[in-house]
Length: 354
Image 1: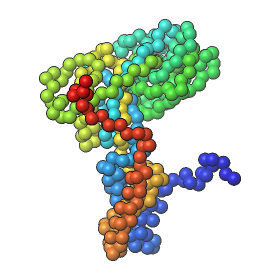
Image 2: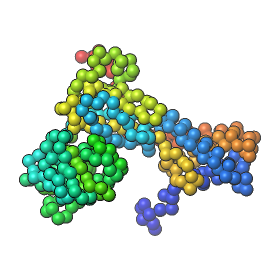
Image 3: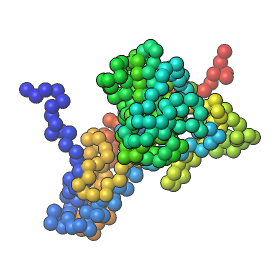
Image 4: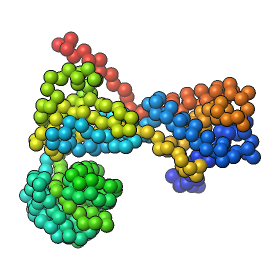
């Protein structure tokens, strides 16, 4: 008898080639006519199919949480590449760990990373260093923020220890950062610990303008404005903690316009957003598909119907049959694409009730 979760064969990814082979077969194209031109056209139609799924707005697997930094005196908050729409947004504030002894393993003045002064920096002299703090008593850290003083490609680890010898990593982020960019990440399951540090793994030396070890998070839901509401604001540059936002959906770089504009009191605030992302584009037949298995049949059926219409090699007599199969498969997939949590409705009538 197999153990639970041991059926690894069921987890084998469905590649673009496998989907194309099945879809073209349904469209009446025999395998010997599956030329490179047919495959290329099929990839184009597959990516258009992904776009139609985004427009349906039901792909729960592409609903992700992100943490966006607030920058003092900056009203525009860029959204990361691949984001289509922001669904929910809260503004989070944190208490800052203090009272400990800062340290830096690879040179620089550690205190400058914790002095609340963005004009000073802990400038390390060799790569792969750590910056942290030894606390007088054990304390939990739930979030970490780093303001970079240098552009670099880096993997950043957040770690804790009680003896300064054995360190346990709780989370890590990897990517390319710019000079003056904040990077925030949460530490789920963080314990009470005496020492906390952020460790850089990179080819170049790390410069940290500020390191923020945070705890006691407090989040306030923010309401979105439509264009009329934002445009009617008489003073769009009022400073303060963010209370509202307008979402500008540009072609390549959508962004949020926040109000009030973050001031010095809000320079450590973060915007915790739930976004809908685009599905990853398929460029090679061997590429795995950016979707769960519950959608394989529905997308294959949709692709088959599209190819029957688009490819001269297909049997167009099958089109109506394929359209019916597509509708049935899409309905089944949509029915399963659900959040089992109860739905609550706020009718917004509190002003009319006592």
